[in-house]
Image (tube, rainbow, N blue to C red; front, side, top):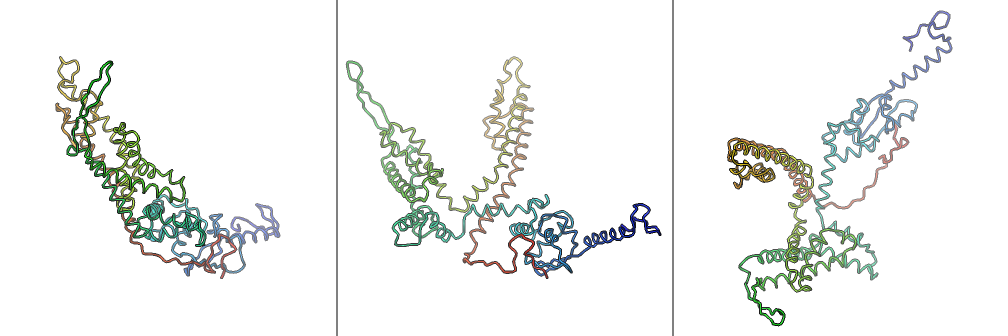
Length: 479
């Protein structure tokens, strides 16, 4: 620099030993470098003009504006971009300060799209704004899980592609696939048509009827005690053995048979008309809910009632069918999605309960033994806390403030431990529950918003001639 160099009257520098010609060259290069640093650049984004220095834009190599400065035209520098002006203010501040903050008045996908255009890495967002920046992703995932608001339109657009249906109506194969697509929608998508809603209502009726019959089969009012006689060959003579057997009301058996016939018909239609059998088989709901629910009927017919106990266990799967029918209910889907999103909170709650259960059951066990009878070798004759594992049940019941009363402390020290256990349980439950409630509130609001979305007409969006879609510095518009 000039301020750091002393020039003698003979044309030589006393410190660096440069002659007059070399000094002029050095000063010219130094002035050009300083001029490059102090050179102003005007960037017009969406009609809003921003002024900064060229050196500021070069502070982030590899970005769009930094690449733009590599092509330095002569004269004044002014560039125009038809982009969001508000987001660019945050991007420009990132060049100035080195810290990228997310604006709160801009939707997350828009901010992420603008960062991609300016070739700024989204990982550079500051930690204080990262949660705000990622909220839109959770919202998009939740909205996708709740399904489209216009199910019929979604169905009409999706099924011809999934079934590979051609547009030629004369093609018999195309007509067959189109018929299979309609049948699949009829039994799988209740919102595809009015007939599908009727089928869904009939299916729901048979499910409820089957569950009702299954529950009534266990009631004593539908049981009849019948006497059975059986001849038993005992060596050289035959004995007549009499025994009693509980027989279920035949009406319930008929009702169950009618329901099974409907379940078989529904399963065969869905299996025959599915677009991909492998995907259909891999679906747990199709195998467990549909196939296993009708399996006891065939076992009962084939084995003649010899495997009755095993059949009753399999009949329990019939109850799970109602969850498949409830997948179209927004409230149930919100609840299921909330449970999935709150897995960490539930795990944290389980860990807290496990630690509290172990600590308080151990303390209660020894607190009760302190006041034991010296003549009692076990020191536990006066209390129900015979060992620590038994205290696990008492600790869980106390921490959840249920208090069945089957086990309770007998000594003063044990009562103090019980009070502390109840207080710890209240605090343990109070910590993760608000997070779960907030998740439910968030997803429920998103689900309601998804249901209230208006129908959108398809419009082809043509890119404007002045819009930059490729991150190339040669495409900028220079004024």
